[in-house]
Image 1 (tube, rainbow, N blue to C red):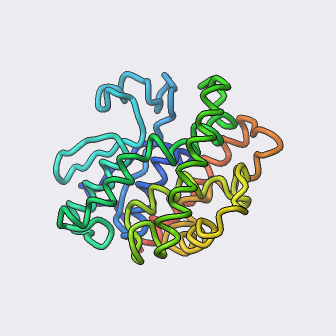
Image 2: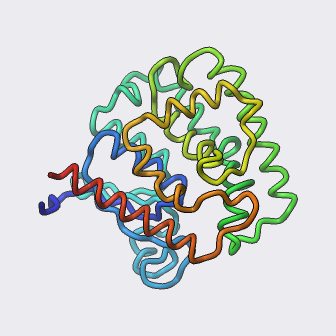
Length: 254
């Protein structure tokens, strides 16, 4: 089936956590999209530092979204999530009223100083060797992530099924792609035994539509706790992620 002329375009790679959350939202809502390779940090064709990509996205970050329907073109995963919910009226995931959005916004805005450190402290140092994270930065990221996880373990997830009450929101999607990637069935980089509420929540999140498709790349990457993945494994993981998403899109279209 031919893709509609005004299909949403998402640029990135499957192993990128912020990219995954945008893709997961679209899969969950069965919204068609075109997924376009944008290799982080590369100056080659299809790279985020290539002049063609920088011409449409000067900050060179992923995910990057182009919406031909409205002309909106933006980076930053959380901005994209909010935009898509508002545009499409997905008020089950991001309420229409400001009061309903407040707690969700608080989690999204604090993300880079908290749960995002799952990637900075655990995932990226093993997978993105080109970034050369100094050891003190990694150590601080470990502590910051553990502290942020303890907060949601003892508070939000101790009181309700999801982070904001008993219904899932985009705050859960954004948080899970960071936390969930460290589970034993994926990279196995963190001990969740002291976090029973978080483990229960991650189990519930794994049942959400689109979870397996958007995380296929991590299944292929596998346990990297004992040995860092080589470049061939990383490429294979991204390729499987693209193939899985393409197959899912094809089945949805038909």
